[in-house]
Image (cartoon, rainbow, N blue to C red; front, top):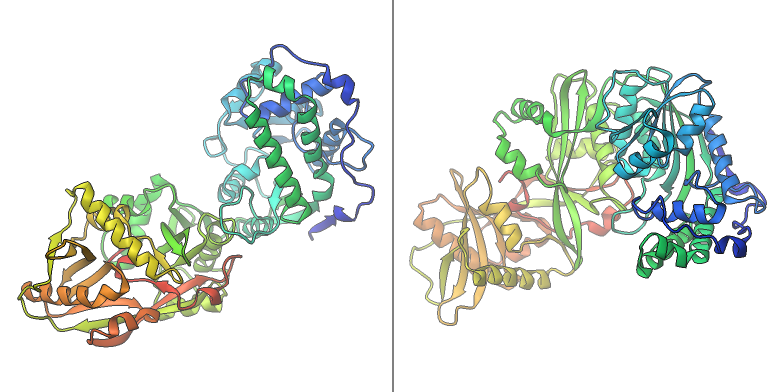
Length: 607
């Protein structure tokens, strides 16, 4: 059973009271041993030296009342942490050792502890202060390799917020035996209601992911009110020692000013309930039947095999690189044993969200091995990877504000039943006969390829700006030159015909057509133009299709913009493609997105 303690109910916790500010302000070290540490760790370390004559713990303190010093509050935090550890001499992995204060304390109490840090300057400092025999290695968590079940406990002391949560639980699962302890203490986001990437992991998402990965939550201590005064201390100590900090660390005034502004901002977020400080104590309870983790680059061949078994054709390395090569894209896999049995991919996409620039994600390559049971249950691989992806990547404070995709009826109903998606639109198809081959006298056509002068690239961007102006009350993926080049000209498999339509006499651009020919006919995959120019572009597409002897011209568009195409005649029909929105994690409400997307076939990754 989880033990939840709300320390907001603890009485007498007030702001940190500065001890002896006048006397300590006169102290200064001519040459700081912390000058080479990363900012702002160097500031906090050197300020502690100036204030107390020594540097120990640099993590947050936990203030029981306003009569204790920061150092005492930090010692209380360390004791609180150690009380959750198994009795010594057990094996502990300390992830991100800082300057080694907690590492040394654990060693003094008889623990067999190994520390890892990815910071070369911190590693060098620890070697100098503790000696080269200290059991600390220069590795990130993912780069640290050892035998399975090598530790009895894994400890994250204010380091988890800088590490991907999926990686935290994956590595802890491998490093710990059954009943091993995972302890995380540090800052978390408690809520988020704005677009943009937050610097902290959401606490509730962290707890949900732990359960999904086989960890039982034994204890959750809410330490927010006890930790927040640390920020007041940092503001006070940098003000008292400002001149010496600037001189001894060779900083400029703007750096300290920005640091103070950041600490004030964080303090307000504590006061308003957006940020919090907590201790989470987990126990490795089970070995999950299905393991959820990020897909690594050396595992792409497994994804290719699952892709072929699901869609009955090959994905090439070039196609994978085109889709997922960007650092802004993500893939989650589900393993059973050593076999990849499910995959959920997301491609980053710049969008205009009701006129504001944001980042969305196109969901793609959603696959589950047909031989796996429980696919449609809340414990099955589809639910596990979808819920995890939504929690980690989509919504307020996440890399992507919103997501979109193109599921069919069956997949949409499954996701809706589990509360993962909500429908916010549908796709319809328009179809036209081809037209006469004769040119339109008022306009002329220009083929766009890689070898375009800067003027043409500028014209593409101008066409997009005119389209964007018409769709300020909609949600639409950016269609500028950079996008056009990557999406169509750089596609490793598909061939597209990209046509710029211009006035014949004054060369004014009217719009851009992206056409794709296949046995079904000529598809208008995309267009970039003011909405009033759509009939003209369709007329040109029908004429070009006639020249190529295509069977027909067709176009797919979200139903809410069907009226822009209906004026040109043709036949309209519904097709089995839905537009979903994230209904699982905190983000823009689906009802605010409903019937606002502009999506065409080109917004898919495979057309």
